Picture 1 (cartoon, rainbow, N blue to C red):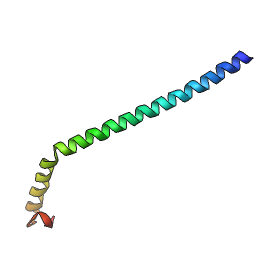
Picture 2: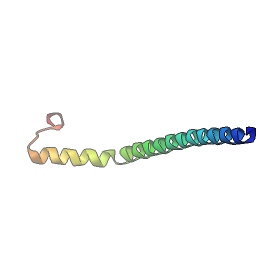
Picture 3: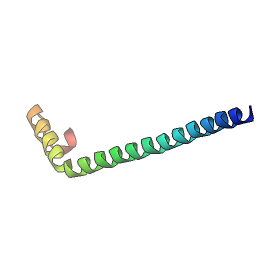
Picture 4: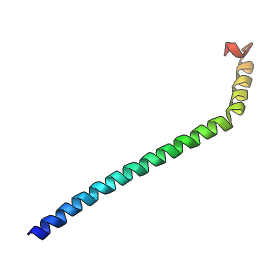
Length: 67
């Protein structure tokens, strides 16, 4: 009977450790995605700004401050 209880306790602690590990993995995944988004934004910021300026001028804006 004591051996059975020891196995149950070990199983519960093992499942808790797996939950903690998966939380760390999700945190690393989210951090990686955030870093990738930041790199893409900085890499294409000039192109995106030009696109918005062209759109503003074609709609009828007279300057950068009007849009």
